[in-house]
Image (cartoon, rainbow, N blue to C red; front, side, top):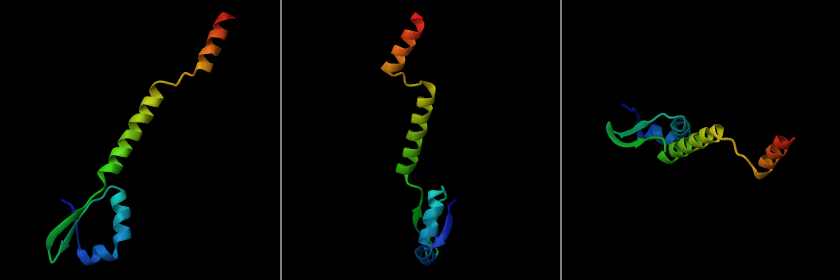
Length: 79
């Protein structure tokens, strides 16, 4: 269950709430005890983190071999 916070407190503490949401927390904003909205981390940010992690894994798996590097290996093999 998400942590509940009143609408007035959410308004006055918005910068702090946004920092906490960026860190992965989520909140339900209430007004007079009734749930009004959920404040959750953006899916776009999560997707970007996932894509970056996958790119880093792929980069670590297969090193980039440039034409220059191939020529160097070829020359070294002939010696």
